[in-house]
Length: 528
Ligand SMILES: [Ca+2]
Ligand SMILES: [Ca+2]
Ligand SMILES: [Ca+2]
Ligand SMILES: [Ca+2]
Image 1 (tube, helix red, strand yellow):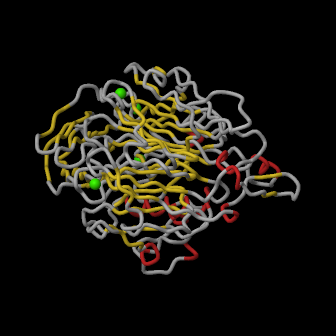
Image 2 (tube, protein in one colour; image 1 turned 60 degrees about the horizontal axis):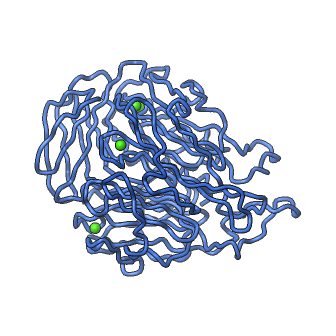
Image 3 (cartoon, rainbow, N blue to C red; image 1 turned 90 degrees about the vertical axis):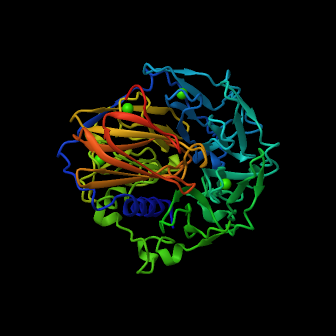
């Protein structure tokens, strides 16, 4: 499937999966929130360096990713922005990824160098997860060439453990990655998407006009398998790509999402491939996976799928299909932007080649979209109505959400190719409230990745899975946010931990954030 239908299929799939029909709350006609562009007032000064010098090398047009993460574990979401670098032989400037620490007052400080991350590498995306369960999130940066694993020392710094962890010695064009605990042993494992077999020496000449070089479509390159690494628990990883059944050298993978599509408590994976069939890797609970994408109806676009699968492409009926027909979507996240109890969808768009300007009807820079869910699964793009310049055309790539100011609503972080990053603060206007949960695993992995939460309030039920990844090259915050409209209490929350343990808490006040420690109980946190 092409990238456009990749996004539509991905979005429709997630919509079908994540929006339970019982979540039917009334949605106001006008959006009950607005976005304020706080990028510069927050102190975020970032420009992605794609390295583009005119050679039109394939990776230049793909990045970068971004994340909300709490690297110093102070309860405030920090920001990580991935960067590329100049190509060998075309050196003009020094460029590194950026780590911004949250100052807890709406501003951020650039702590990249102090954290030991002022290192040049051609980065694409990231995955953040506490793989050694010490309470501090570690960072994997996917790269052109060798991916890098940075272990958090817990003292505000990171050390490069790529080699000692066993992840070294691998050259690829890696894209999205995800931490998840596929064997449920309490240790996060790592899945990495690779796009195509590419190196600067083997870049193919493609052209739109037969004269000037342009970025190739993936058909010009051979595919590359994704990788799965099992966490041994001693700081090292074992490559189980082949033995786990996920090896496939024809894949051209851009995105990966964790889900539990058969609801058996074991995490499955959806891998979105460009021009190749998508994969739905069903966890067979014995360390292996089976691709069931074709049976499930998610391998191809709507036209190509057989019926009777678990998934149906509802992009057209849901109102997402038509407005995304002429856009090229990259980062996408489901979030309850207006806190009405129904998950909305944010998408960033942008073409891969600036010469597309010459082609009628399709722009290089394209407007980001924010589809509000009316509570009945019908989506309507309100990007132009929410202010902040959000809907101005951009060459969008990465997208993540997080409540950086701890006022209970979800703010958005966006990256653009060879351009700036954007931070949008969400301001609620209708008085809707949320309830937030941060999970701390003890027997389960410390991040609680793979835990499911269900809240019951006033006759309705909402559920979420704690997970990383899912967007493009990016990761949203791990704490979970439920919008509850005007309700000041929820009846109960049920947490199903990956260890198998179930916990339940009753009569919780909304407008607050809670920390749930596996086996220890629930505590209210300060702030929101
Ligand atoms: Ca922090
Ligand atoms: Ca594991
Ligand atoms: Ca909503
Ligand atoms: Ca917020």
